[in-house]
Image 1 (cartoon, rainbow, N blue to C red):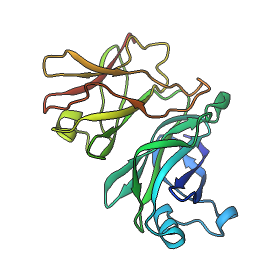
Image 2 (image 1 turned 45 degrees about the horizontal axis):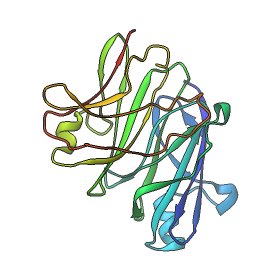
Image 3 (image 1 turned 60 degrees about the horizontal axis):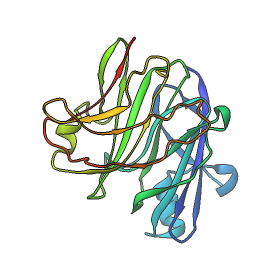
Image 4 (image 1 turned 60 degrees about the vertical axis):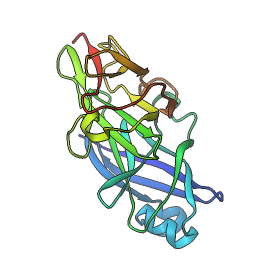
Amino acid sequence: MANVNAYGSLIGSAGATVPLLNTAQTEASEEEIKTDAALVGSAQTAGTFYVQQYGATPIVQAGIVTENDFSYCFVRSAGKIKLALPMGSGISGGSQGLPSRLPYPKALASGDQVICMANATSDREAAVSVACTNGEYHCFSVTASSSGEQEFVSVLDGQGIGVTLQGRRVAWWMASSGNNDAELTSPVYLLDGSGVPMASVGFTGSGSGSAMVFQPCVNGSIALNSRLVFRTDA
């Protein structure tokens, strides 16, 4: 996979802007995006830079752009996902709408990292990022390889949404399609234990010209046997 550019910004509640840049983001790999050294003097972990400069004010907006396709991006704090970040592609002006507001602002801690998954336009990895009413964020992904149902699993431990977020309610979510546009036969569905759709959200594609930003979710209650899926015909 190629090395590509990944860049963007985090915006604090007091208007502070953290410029981010990785000029060697490896496609199909999770990598950290640090501060843009050309603008702030050195490449630092985002949380460390933010706390040193701006203290504990929360992040209220964010936007990350990848050169080709995008999957997901999050702030990792002590091994957990603190924030899921809106994304866009450099293809066809796909960063329009960024930075975008975050449903539940969070303060960064020293050491918090911005972790990005970028892909080539040929990669079929799709992803869903969610924000729950308790302020918890999470990211799920799956790489389609055949027709039928594709179930999203946690990018941290490979568990489904039911195990990962049992008892929570998804209030906001967003989805990236990967290279599946010609094969899609459904949007993303949140299914109950009987396989009945409870909620759905449409995909954002890398060539769409629009950024992937959070959309409201209705009826997003998660039970242990809930599943997050989409379907393809190839």
